[in-house]
Image (cartoon, rainbow, N blue to C red; front, side, top):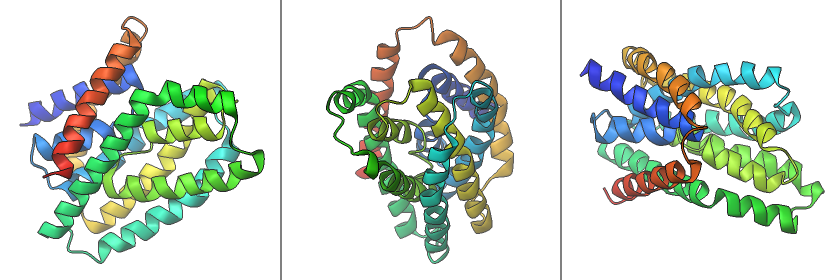
Length: 256
């Protein structure tokens, strides 16, 4: 079983390195559907897993000047309070009950379907936003805080959303920003959000620390290899394959 977790961590790390899509979109459903880990434990463990793996990204992007800290602060102003409130909501539930399990699975499925749409149509959405510039400059700050709020709830409930959804939405709100700046800013925001949500889950007792360590053994080399392969494989084929996997898993969870 431990080898299975290490291999799964490696596969997820490889895909994250290839596509840049957050591990939550892949790791949490894999733990739930393949290994039958309780949904709340899968979410909590994956959140701390994400905060560890993405911390390295902050240093890399920070050195290159790819982080807009003003946007990070606006996102966090919405996401951190939303994460805390969502954790308090989960505390009021019997997290192991059939109703709680069904709720987490449903919202995990919804988050995966939204992520699949953002993966499939990201380029079209970005191009549309650049061409039409339909978001006024005065709207950017409140919309960024609102985005943070939505991500805070979604990420705390499902561990999904900080990556693909966050990047796509930021491109729409800030169409003139460079790709590197948006990706770096999204990663910089994802670390405190996943850490806050992960610590919230730790307070609920829904983090498996042994499992976390085993997953990291596989995922760290996977991310390194995937990052180096990304320039040698046609990006659109990887993106389409990933989107189909997310749609299949998302529908399965929503209809479960």
